[in-house]
Length: 451
Image 1 (cartoon, rainbow, N blue to C red):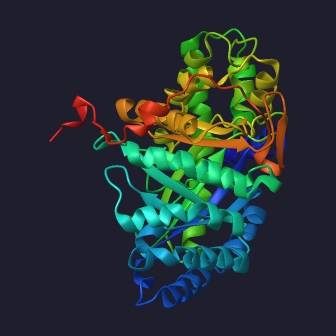
Image 2: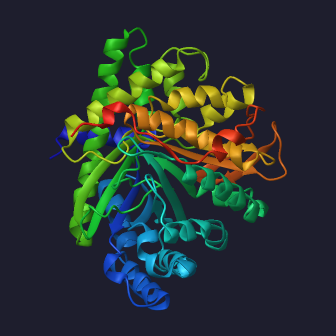
Image 3: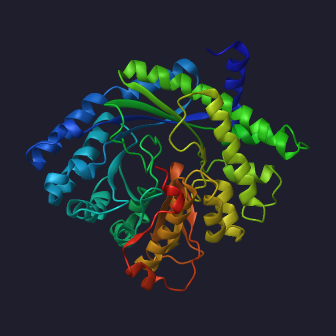
């Protein structure tokens, strides 16, 4: 239970420091929906999501009012849809449309799970499903997609990596009139987790219960304020302060998660304590790193600062709850963090430094706009690099890049809202096409052999 001091601290965090529950995400199993035809399955998918999630918006609104904590997003994640579509992969788009229609009907922000897990191999039905992604994302509004192409246990499926470079290009072209917005709803993972509540990469893992509530908490402004209060602390003291702050934030998330699960008739899954920034001032991971002692995010020392931050956040979360999961750490999406945006515009932050930072943060190369004429093999090579970091370091990594059609370095893509704006960043000019065209499987590292 919260004591009086914790209540007062939480109120202060909300009013002055941008603390919020970033998302309440309901995970729903769709395995019982598989029927004899795509049409029947699509109808069952729609009915199941509408029935299970019919009260999520009202419940979260009530909880936000009762506890005084903003709940920004209400979302649903579902069983990877490639499994549901396996008997009729040529009609996968029907399932995608049913999911998007259900998301609209219940009033949620996004629905994740138009996903495939092909980290070791890719069956024919999975390839057909993946080929449907560009058209499905272009013709839906709230549906999000992800593909897992590697893991520390199996290695990296380079045939899938090659294909995903092409899929991202096609998705950008099909949503060019909207700045390539479809690519903002598409994530390529290595070591994807089954209980991630954050979009666009959320899906409901097959090892999960029938219906689960996972909550994502975010408070970059709270952490920044805590560091400001100890300007002369050494790094050990600074890490302890971040850890204590993360503990408090996680406690607030656990309170909302348990109550939401009870009211929605679902199991309490996990609290994901991720410092997920927004374009608003005072809600920036980059600002935290600069408060730690950097002139600008992207300069030398940035990776070390991010490592301290990420580790302390995880330790604080685990101290506060035995149900911490998802990704839990610090996100570095360029377009969604005002500090990252401005550092990229100044030239202080480039894709190489971002890649180095992904070795110690919670996800990967996220919401990065690249020139529209970037070829598919270069995008695949970016995915391969990021997957290699995840595979070798036994951590989740991801790529969410937007080839901005018709735009070059120095231009900007503006999505608005939480997705923000992205300066188009330069890439290396050398080709990796021969490497990508080799295909096959990059073997798992030796430390994967733990049995």
